Length: 176
Image (cartoon, rainbow, N blue to C red; front, side):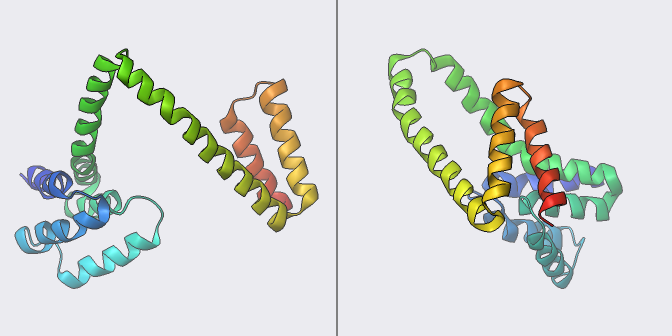
């Protein structure tokens, strides 16, 4: 029964909490504090403050913590699933619609129109990262990272994940 209650407590805010985690917080508080009484308002506030201090989506962090406090690891898994289930269902539905109409001329035209702005935005972001690195880390380190990344990606066809991890290790060792 507790797993069903956890599911309901996080599924309902996930469905009606349009706008993401911040819009869902009052709904989650109502379920957790008022409806089921798993926490006091003060405990909820402290958990919310801690959750905001950590990286990542706030609703899933809150679900994981509350689910664990109420029913251990299985409770945590149920609460997290209930939090992401509405978005997951919507994404699957939209993907089904997209796949159905992907070859339609208007969809192809919309896709072609959006490619250029996305490429420009990614290019601007890359230049901003480059110049930030140039200013913060210096010319030598930036040149080493850019040169090594280009060489590993283009010449040796190393997977980007490994190049990113290598750059993180380089930064941790050389720039700390």
